[in-house]
Image (tube, rainbow, N blue to C red; front, side):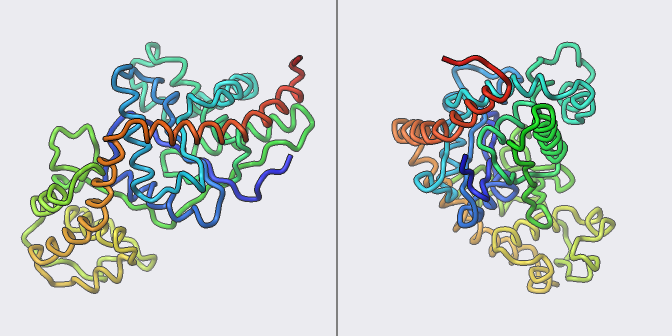
Length: 346
């Protein structure tokens, strides 16, 4: 089978609205990858139901995530945007991998322990076997690279272990060992109301986050209201020799470094250069500059997302077309898997 030398697979669960942290941490980088890879970007609705989802809300949430991809710059004509449940190979291959992966491997997955909490006996089997489905997501397309954040590195390592064991068990060289695609220092976007906490949809204050659906006025208002401190902005001496904020300095002024980091990420500038540019300036000046930059990026994305969301038929058509093209890749791969495993097919 001819597989592209470089193919990306990545996905987002439709369990919450997209915010600035999702954009800077993942989607902005996905857009950059389009020039180097064949890309499949998936709304992973099957992963979403490992915890309870309102069936009446899930379709809307799925459309909103897809709209976010496209509004941010993902080209759904050149690449593939689809929702996971429209491609049966994900579930089919996940079952094969349930029989390849070892119980001990899953017992070591820290994310299950975190999500299940103290009530592990009441967690769904789906939540426990989530990493096997993630491996199937990637390997159903024989993807070679996967953009990963810190919380998914362990799952990608498991996907590599599953691919290697499948190849070894059946004496084949069939699945590639997918490589992590890492983008230097990850952009950690913290709450606009408390710089010590991650930006999150679950925060009761809407002013704690910038949603990707926010219009320009809302974005500017949230930047203006963002928590700061009374001191002038810090300079490059706050960084260590690797260009990272010294932990003690960040702990003293978390809100300052959060806003400076957001500016650096949106402007595609090294943090060192941003610190040098604004050293000694007042927050009132910096917030105005940051608001203008944020409105010109996130504000535009929010406007386009709302346009897309107003036409369900357009989003559904994009997902349907993407799923058709995804199946054209995954179904032949799944047939080969069935032959390798020894399933009898007509």
